[in-house]
Each structure stands twice: as structure tokens, then as C-alpha cells.
Length: 326
Image 1: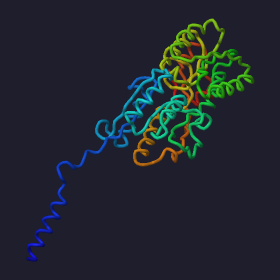
Image 2: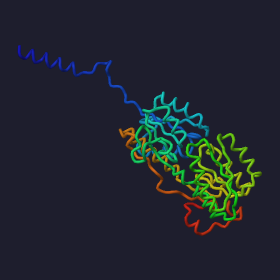
Image 3: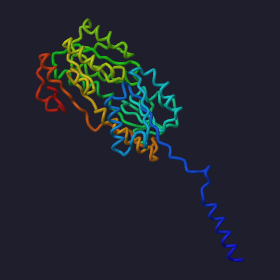
Image 4: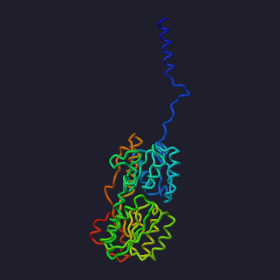
């Protein structure tokens, strides 16, 4: 009798331990990352982000999904795109500059946001502080508020005869007023008159470039903004054709024929964004991930353009250059 009871108990325990067909273990959900960019999926910044994910062990389609959406430089498209990605839903949103980050934060207070190139994240209300951001957003700053002034100083150093510089900027940017004030403060002691040219939409760039010839400017400073991102080559070529010394913050500008580029390496920012995505997927909270600032700024000089403009680059500037395009 005892053996029979033991057998029945063992049999019952075995039945309980066998999973029922309807309760089979479901496959693990693959994390989904939403990326809002200003150009195409083959953009060098997005490519750097994806490569950094691969370096961290992620394989798209296997253990991570990347949903890329382009604004084509039209920031008014960001709210709709952000809402679409949040509804999908995505596990993390990766966005570019300040306006895009603000729109993303307006779309969600729960999905983690990693921004890549925000000039003053505290000043525009994205984060409570750099060391402890609070909320659902963190990422990389690009020091944009100080860049414009330094770029004008470099332009004057390389082209000392300039006296009237056209400054292309987007007044819709949340930090444009502060950046322009910084440029104005530097322009006075340099004896440079500024011609402020506001550009609010990428479609306005061609007409602005066409009008430069009649504005009597002898140099061009293009402040960093997504509205110019898809037109870097056109801007570089136009300023070279008009024989105007020019400066921007991205290396691509100098490669395309602009005289100077000075700023952070944006590809590095996107690689850093991938490390933050990895941390968040592993349980880190954006509120506790400090905003990173660039550890270095790069100076790129197009010597071919300088020669065509009759400019001799001072040796002191050449020694500070990270790259000289011959």
C-alpha cells in the first residue's frame, strides 16, 4: 500500500512539472530602438551608431531592431515621427539636436531618450543638471553655445582682412539667441560687422545662397543646425564659388570645399549614444546617466580652398589642425 501511495505522489508531481502545450515559453522580445535623423539611413552618423551597436554585441534583426526615420532637415516633422515611434513602441528614442529632443520629450515622459548633439540641455529644459539629468532624457552635448564665437575667431585668424561676415542661423533653434550673442561679443573686438541671415527651413537655403553675392559679405559663418545638414555641400560650393572664406562645425563641410570646420566629432557622439542605449537596455535609468560633453574639438582646414582664395594659413593654425585637406 505504501509503495502504491509513493508511486501516485511521484506520478502527480511529474505531471505538475511537465509544461502544458498552451503554456510553452514564448521567445524573448527583441529590443527596438527608434532613431530620428536629419538625412538618410546611410548618413555617416547613423552608420557610426549602428557600428557601435555591433561592437557592443548587437546584431540587427537578431537581438536588436533599429527603426530609422528621417526628417530631411524639416524639424516640424519630428513630433509626428516621435509619436509614431512611441506608439510602436520603441524601448529607446535616439534624437539629434535640441529642437528634436524637445519634441521627443513632449511625445513621451516614459520612453528613455538619448540625444546626440544638444548645445545647452540644461538651458533649454531637457535635463535638470548635467551630472544628474532627472526625467527620461540624457545624452551628449556639443558645446554649441561657445562654438560660434570660436569659429569666428578662427576665420579672422586665417583671413585677417575680413570685415563683414554673413552669419547663417536658424532663429527657431532654442539656443540661437545665446549663440548669436556670443558671436556678436567676439565680432566687436575683431572689428567685424555681422550680417545676420535667418534660415528657418531647408528649402530656404538655395535662395539664401543665391542672395549672398549681393549682401556685400566677405566671409560666411554657418551656425550648427539641422536646417543646414542636407545642404552642406551646396553651402561649401557656393561660398567657394563666391570666393568667401567660410567656417562650419562639421568635417563634411571642409571636405566639400568649405575653408574651415571646427567642432566636436559628431560620429563620436553617435558612438557614445550607442553605449548609453546599451546601458539603458541593461537597466540603467536616463535620470542617472550624466550628460557627456566633448573631450576634444576638431579643426579641419581645406588648404586647396585656402590657396584658391589666396590665403596663406598661419603656421600657428596649421599646427592646431587635426586634418589638412590638400
